[in-house]
Length: 256
Image (cartoon, rainbow, N blue to C red; front, top):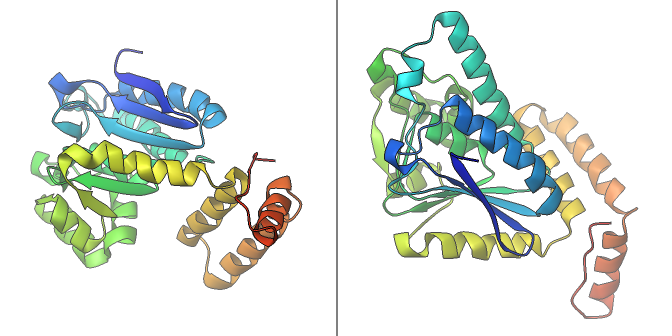
């Protein structure tokens, strides 16, 4: 791979680093294809995935040079692929943490929003500045951003193209934590290790139930939750977890 790095720095924790620092990790088609290829392996080998960027940016948006050459029909194909990739990240069976180390603009902000948890360096910047170029978000921002920060705030950010800092992103609910830049990866690995120690099948089902709130009403969502929760009682992990609690010891979850 040329545009990303895939590593396993901790047991059952994968790390994808966007590796085009000279382009502020702009998300061109090849970068997205490499991320997609990495996900095939990650989902099999890891219990948690962290995504970050090298250099000053998490991802500073789409590759403008690539966009400038697209016709409307070509953009449809490009946008569909970006949307498909973000949906895939959002629906991975394992949790995904965005370690936002710097600029997360346009497509980069959309990528971060597709992750389950966003931890931001105090140096991070967020925004959807597409309207400044005469275009608009096309890889999920108009749908995910309102779900995170509310419709009015999403409209403000999209219509103005305003770039906000990490503390404002935290205030409006776009990120879950802001940490000192030097502690960003340490904090993300702390969270990842905690999650990796939980029963993976229960994490998988809980993530599916939580994601269902995007498309299901309350009654359907409650029925879906019960269905998924009941399935877990057939797993070895559930038996182990309940038995360990009664025996006052730490459980050993095996993902079975």
